[in-house]
Length: 79
Figure (cartoon, rainbow, N blue to C red):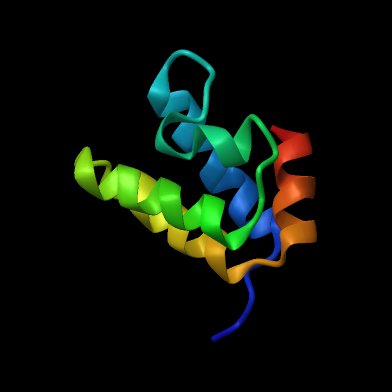
């Protein structure tokens, strides 16, 4: 499986944040807004998204999980 690039995922993140409507990262808040980029943080967010029927959050979380921690942090700083 290829590692997603920041430009590929950034547009999806922006769309996800716009969908949320209040400018916070929804189910992925602790990763996208707070910069908590460890695998365990992303896995927590995916679990939360599943429990709250946030299919977009699950899909985006799974993409984030395939990225490096450095990529996740850069992405968090861009949003």
